[in-house]
Amino acid sequence: MKVEFLLNGEPAVADGPPTRTLLDWLREDRGLRGTKEGCNEGDCGACTVLVTDGRGARALNACILFLPQLAGAAVRTVEGIAGPGGELHPVQRALVEHHGSQCGFCTPGFAVTMAAMHLNGERDHDAGLAGNLCRCTGYAPILRAAEARRPSPCPPGCATSRRAARPRRRPRRGRARVPSLPGEGWAGRRDDAPAFAATGVSAGPARAEGPARGDTAGAAGGLEPSIPVAVPPAPVPEGGAFLPESADALAAWYVRNPDATLIAGATDVGLWVTKGLRDLPSVAFLHRARDLARIEERDGRLRIGAGATMTEVLAAVRDRHPSWARLIERYGSAQVRNAATIGGNVANGSPIGDNAPALIALGATLHLRRGDTRRTLAIEDFFLAYGKQDRNRGEFVEAVDVPLAAPALRAYKLSKRWDQDISAVCGAFDVTVQGGRVTAARAAFGGMAGVPKRARAVEAALLGSTWTGAWRAP
Amino acid sequence: MTAFADDFQPLSDMRASAAYRLEGARGMLRRYWQEMAGEAVDLRGCAGMMDGSAPIAATGGAGTAEAHDSAALHVTGRAAYVDDIPAPAGCLHLAFGLAEVARGRLVSLDLAAVRAAPGVVGAWAWDDLRRPADTSPSAHDEPLLSDGRSTS
Image 1 (cartoon, each protein chain N blue to C red):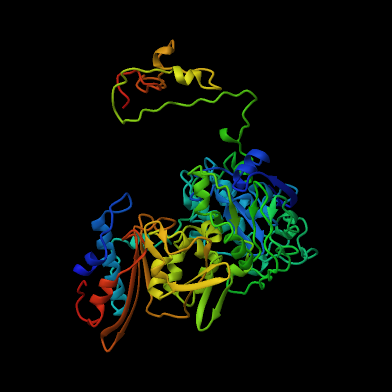
Image 2 (image 1 turned 180 degrees about the horizontal axis):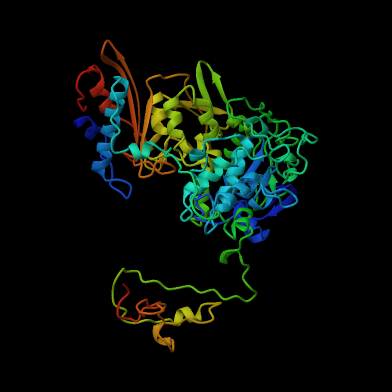
């Protein structure tokens, strides 16, 4: 199938099977070998690229990014972040001046992640660069470079506010006060995404006129309304993929194609392909169903659409559920959180998925949908056994809702590494104490059983006990 | 102490043992208890992990800070690594047959099926080569191909 997007400011057409990765296509088809293959599983960040679409500008791992995920987006690789005359981007200059490279293999990834942070005005380099591994230079000079680029003059239009990351209807030309600086090709000219065009792709009937134009990005900021679907989705061409534009379109298609693999962020399915060498004969990519990614307050609860990325979830729960938010900050890396969705994390049912304990402790409700039929269940009841969830054929996770606040919620993670590691144990608690005695308790753990599991015996042992005096293990 | 055991019989794997997991889970509840009871949480042992903000020493010293001579290539992605060099036309690929046991004796080796496989140009074992297949430049103690005595 053919997928069109902007590559370093120029229109590009990528041709290949739907599960061809951007990294392979860049290196093998386009000869753009600055983007490196390190781990090929989204851990090391050597393949980091900058992707701008309706969700804003963000760093993503190209090794587990399938070509259809880029339809209509704008991609910048390490070759495309310098100015048109070859003048280095401030982050590139800082890396050179502060000795941020030694063998240089991880450096392109660091440069692109730093450029994305620069563009979005992000300052927390420890957090932002946790998804870029270096094994020889050492992080000290890299972090020095990241710090040092702050006062550097920015290329025209390379504003350092989160707002600047949002695609605009028109390029903001004429704002350059320092025209001799580089950057016309890099964020000076906004990477307006081209009109959606992909052959061999079934976009369903509810195809948008064009993505990313005038969209507002951001997690909790409200996404544009869904487009109603009136007619059945078009069949998917041979060797193609289904890219629904709405949850309705997905529901109608999936009930007829229940054996298909649903791909949201591909942070898990990507590894099925790159490491498991699996063929996925029938796939649907969900990232264009923007209504599936909506985060909103509804009926006194916070309803999080399955397609919301963990970056978007983090922004939405940072104030409401700060302890869960701190856990999410250790969930994968910036690149992974920018792709991974909460729906994918729940639906895959991993016993070590890091959202489930917090969701169970919060008393989350899961919203499942098959065709036009919807049902809800307590999230802990979704996880039946290892690898087995209470999900029917053709049924998908549409949303999860949680309370607006839970002041006593705390979530903890035990792993070998602080950042970007799989939990050995992940625990979450929400206990109510009145008059010194426990009147309500919810406790859940990941990594302790074949499923994320509610600890009912622990809860029972806590109920009625005192919450003062010496600690007594239940 | 039995409630956790009632709830969980965790597995032992490369990440953690069952006992460690149980202890970790109990520890989390204890930390929660302390936190909610307003007690100071004792984070000895994980203080290093908690503090990701070690101060970065200022650079300086004798001499001039010369940029790495490949730095500009590194940061722009123009530095070529072996995997970045396109394979020439007709390039042959080498693959090693690896032992399936960590240590053992190579009793016999039949490469006929490998040689007969489509696209295979050649297959060599240790005794097919005129010189010892050893990659050590000095001590000659790094055999590249098993000499048959062991596969350690």
